[in-house]
Amino acid sequence: MSILFTEQNIGPIKIKNRFISSACEDNLASDTGEVTESIISKNEQIARGETGLLISSQMYVHPLGRTRKKETGIHNDTMIRGLKKLVEIVHKYGGKIVIQLGHAGIQASGNVTGQKPQGPSSDNPLAEGMIHEIIESFVNASLRAAEAGADGIQLHAAHGYLINEFLSPYFNRRKDLWGGSIDNRFRFPGEIIKGIKRVMPDNMAFLIKLNSNDYTPEEGITPPLAAEYASRLSGMNIDGIEVSCGTSMYSPYKMCMGNVPVKELLLKYPDAQTALKNMDGKYALHEGYNSEAARFIKPYFNSGRLFSVGGWREVASMEEAVDGGYTDFISMCRPFIKDPFLVRHIKEKKVSRASCISCNKCLAAFPNDLPVRCYINGF
Ligand SMILES: Cc1cc2nc3c(=O)[nH]c(=O)nc-3n(C[C@H](O)[C@H](O)[C@H](O)COP(=O)(O)O)c2cc1C
Image 1: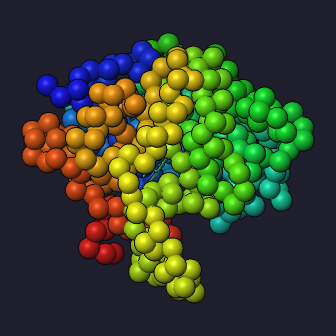
Image 2: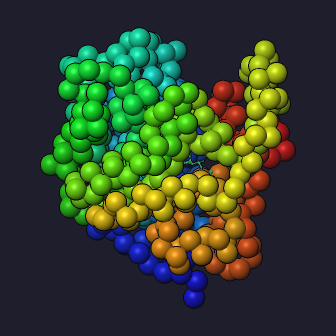
């Protein structure tokens, strides 16, 4: 039997195979952040497709940390009812579900929140009091995830969102307790983790999504710094790290390698023709493109599982990577947008590679305010 279909635990939870559907914001929540029937049905399909672990879309823990109007929220107790339904549908098909907790920092949408986005040291830096308020929001969100019956939580510390901003020497230029040294930059996630660990039930897994490379205009996180953070996370008994890269603001096609969807982006940004055409063709996807970085970081993380997301497409290379111990799981996002039943199709040997061609039109749905789905044939 393929190693991909062997059980593996992440902390206290047992996953039936080595497949994870990575967090995927879908632009499908209600305008007030609740889980909708469309979200339930998307996740139902992925769970019915025998995916071992589903990571939810990023959910905002604080009203000012919202990326867009139709992002799912976990910022108040009225969200719990919908979250319970989401958890139940995944459990019904034998899958596990972890809820991704996030705050968008300077990538928040001012149009939606009504306030200028704030980060550690943007032109609108977070005041001390607000930093504590956000830490508490993460802790309260983890309690809501527990109340909803989720199997765990994942802190979104990648892609240029707030936790990534605190960790990155590019975004974080603070000179106070929250910046200036590795110890100080780690303080924000460290306090969130301590707070959550104090209240989260022991039967839930604690994961974090971490950038191995920020790809910012000046140096941000690079693999050696990510390894340093991984060893600190190990010291805090984190159950799993998912290794990713890139930021939505500066390097979306490093985060999601493949084509630049020029035609679809021009619908929203008609003046960007030259810039977009210059970018196209420069980000050809290569198989498991964060696996080298994950391999570098792995020896520094002993408290749990480590896996990479980004560019897993060929079943043979997935097998080789898990067999070789370079990644404990195969985490994918776009392939499940194209084929929610991908895992079952692999198990039944109906496919030897994912059918997603990384055209990235799913990503271009966001600026065009469309629901995320596979737009391989255009909008
Ligand atoms: C439409 C779309 C939505 C995404 N939403 C999230 C998200 O909510 N949280 C997150 O951590 N990553 C998000 N990502 C990034 C993916 O989880 C993943 O890191 C990236 O797509 C690379 O993996 P892949 O090659 O398997 O698609 C999103 C990606 C896409 C294409």
